Length: 157
Image (cartoon, rainbow, N blue to C red; front, top):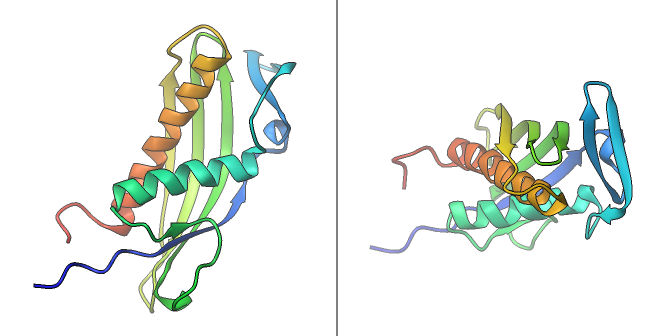
């Protein structure tokens, strides 16, 4: 019995809300108020950081080293193509991070489009920015699990 061929996934277009598309971490301080702290910054732009986190999660969840954020060698027609439209990406210090993502998976061949929406509210593990970042990471892990379940339904090889 030969081993299963690893699933190939390419994470393509990722859109994020303009409000949070900046180097500073944006936190909600009220229903209609946010705070942009000059000294609390993301390590990389969210447009590259979010796909990287999803890529790492999917590689582990699908047990595949063929998950990438850019086109790879081989037959591009055999890859699952993933698009992410982040509708909401906000948090309140010491409270929770909320991530709302519309996602689409274009399977290889003529298979129908897989799509879904993952809305996740993850409590912060601490009162500062580290707690917010950890909550975002955990929330994105839940989004990744939803995408992985669409690509490889439970019980399939």
